[in-house]
Amino acid sequence: MSRIVVGLSGGVDSAVTAWLLKQQGHEVIGVFMKNWEDDDADPNCPARQDFLDVLAIADVLGIEVELVNFSREYRERVFAYFLAEYRAGRTPNPDVLCNAEIKFKAFLEYALSLKADAIATGHYARLAGEPGARRLLKAVDADKDQTYFLYRLNQTQLARALFPLGELTKPQVRAIAREIRLPVADKRDSTGICFIGERPFREFLQRYLPVEPGPMVTPEGRVVGQHQGLMYYTIGQRKGLGIGGLKGATEGEPWFVAGKDLAHNRLIVVQGHDHPLLLSQTLSATDLSWIGAPPLPGQRYTAKTRYRQRDAACEVVHIDANELRLRFDEPQWAVTPGQSIVLYEGENCLGGGVIQST
Image (cartoon, rainbow, N blue to C red; front, side):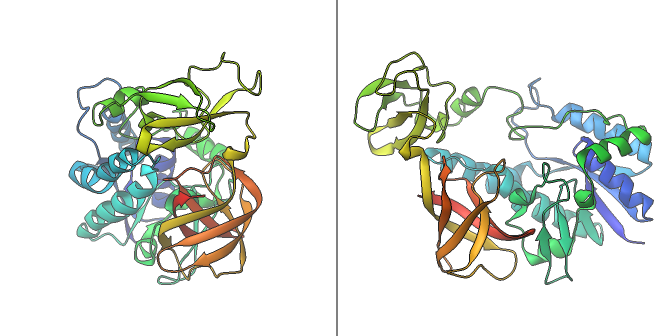
């Protein structure tokens, strides 16, 4: 029997994870990670209800549960990066960093202090291979696969990780939860960034970054509106621009964000979903992280430039310790600096990096 510490979020996935491990005969300890303190009094912050759900889950499963505060680590390792990226005009993915720095680092260290043999989470992913030569594989449920968010994990972290849901589909997980009468069996999945909750994104960012409105311009320089601050917009964004009724060169076509001119505080907008400025056949990435051996130049792989995207065929044009350059078979839509590019070889997640340019 192994001692396994499970990260309980208050959702159905981590709850079923704990139950499956207990059914396998392991000693299971639940830990609820508190990663954010700024909004403890805000009704929009779901952490209070999530912890109450964790207590109810632990009661049904008959396991011990602890609340552990990682707010300082989160602020220093994740939130500081989040703000710095927005200041630089990029659109970060804090969930990727949260996994690498909090859930599989700070949390793992805490679990090892409890003399745990491993940690487990409710991520949809699979592992293969022996410790030291682990491979991170896509989940059986392609719609729920979360390897994109786990690509920065290293061999030391993966050697102590368990993903019991990797072989299950989401409907199967909910069916198990109903069968064992878990109180969160039908709780909806959480969306968005954990520390923002359900609040409007712009309202949240205004608390930490100064607002600098400026012009919205076409690639030719024609002013077509005013933006509320470059940090509020991402490449490919259509909603919230406030220029839907404006006539342009392509009459009737919707407007999209195509770029940011930080030097002049201008937001570049174009008309039409398939405008050339929204399509990229190449990209450059830095801050690389590989689970095993890095991909090889001249070799073909598939890749995702965002979570909800089909794998796209590509070739590695250049790779060294600091930079990766890819060429896609087909142009990719709205490739966004600050987001992650994740490479795959079949079901095998190789790793990736942070997109810098196209």
